[in-house]
Length: 193
Image (cartoon, rainbow, N blue to C red):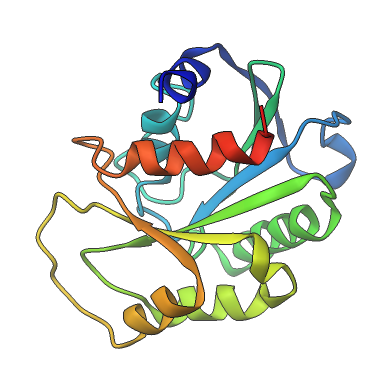
């Protein structure tokens, strides 16, 4: 346990924001990435996992418009992908963001784990299912994280239990850190340190 906690306390530094594949860093560290609907709590989860503010949080959904790379302890690349269901963006912009995410997912050979975030208070939406359908080629690398466990459930979905039986999953709260250590252990074990 102490090894896990101390690993996540090590420095995490911003590397770059990319808007095209040619800008991705050429670093051979194992890589983990986070994606989810706009306003799902992606930045809050990343900050809770790494016990420091590295990803920008915002009250305005859909603020992440680039692929953001962070170097953790010179051992792990952490990637913050743009949210889907892009709030308040034009069709053209939504298409560009979608292409950016697609380019990332199909080109990163050192991507070890993709965390797909789903808002626990709203349940699984059609757009989440579409995203998972699109990613079937990397199914074995997907973990679903249900966020906002500390908040009251507003909507439920029959698809939630179905997804839980197909994918490894966690239900977490970035606010009170519930479930965070379990996700940290998964990430730590990927590195086989």
